[in-house]
Image 1: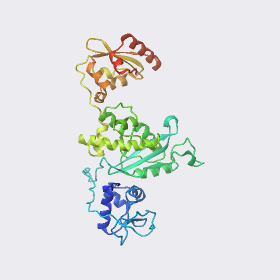
Image 2: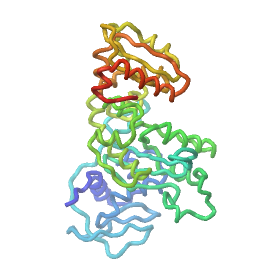
Image 3: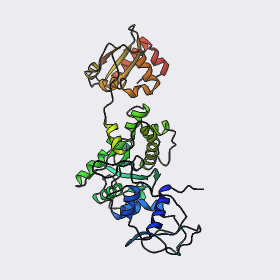
Image 4: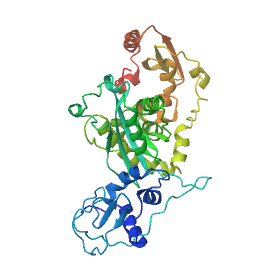
Amino acid sequence: MTKTPAIQKDIIAHLRAAGRAETSRSLASRFLRIEHGDEETCRRLLAPFLATVPGIVHRPEEGWSLAKNAPRATGTPIAIGTGTDAGDPLPVPETGAPPRQASSGARPDGTAETGLDDFVALASEGAGPGGSGAVRVVSLLPVIAGEECQEEHFPAWALDEDARQADEPAGAGLAPEVLEDLLQTIGDLPVVCHRVAREVEPLRRLCAGAGLAFQAPVVSAAKLGHLLLGLKSSHAAGDLAAALGQEARGPDDCRGRVRLVAASFLRLVPLLQERGIDSIEALIEYQDMPAAPLDLSGCAFSAEDLRALPASPGVYRFLDIQGRVFYVGKAKNLRVRLGSYFTPSARGTAKGRAVLEQIHSFQFDTVASEMEAALVEAALIAEHRPRLNRQFDVHE
């Protein structure tokens, strides 16, 4: 038996008590905490909750209402159309659930804060190799009160090349009218994506070029996976899902990725709440806060030494307090790679903890290319046979 979402029961109880039709904007403001959405966007967000409820009808000129004289017994759901009733009205389930509160907190201006279980998951694909380049497809999955709503894809042909209009070039980015529809669907909800630089920044540039403002606050699931679970900062959406016990849902493109992002973020919410983070406003502040540096007082180097490293390819050696090399690695960027070992999230992996427990000093050499770094790394491993390389069998 399918569990009826609490928000559905709340809306039914409200409509019964009101005894009149309510616009989609009014219901969205009261139950979805969307203050400035247009009528059509709010209707689309409400439809997944109300389209299968017996006895509820929608008329464009009035909004949502209970059918008059609807019997109280359970019946077959009616279809929600664009203004005409689909057959005789059918019953509405009884519920005494009180209306859901708008929010657990408020901003200084009196408007409600957005909770962590109200957001739009977003994933995009570019027109170039590996999904790079101008954004050509975006998948959105609204989540309201922790319940997934109807998934939407932009443009209409989405990832079906056979359905693409003949006059729509395959390599072009999203058209301005598509971007407008996308922004209306997002409305006032915050956006959750995996990686902001890959998913949202190209979209922001497209919107700016079309004279549109992408103003929604954006949460990076990848950043949260790094901060909360100790995953590498460059981990994929599948890595985050696996760490949270999530299975893939759908194809290996933005359709499958948007479902992974939505489900993964919902599993991260309890971890955030344990840290006192219970609103999107607090979450944005948390994810943008720089990580506190580790205590390096027991090492022969400081945070300043790490910041002074060259941003160039090279190899590095970690030494213990006896001066023995216990790990050798290579780097595309020495400053970034070595710095990554000395952040709080480094303790989230076995290798990271082993490095922090043993390191006293390090040595490095710059090289001309990544290829040279790989060759020098192999030679140094053969020379020193570092115990940590052998333990984890990793040549980075």
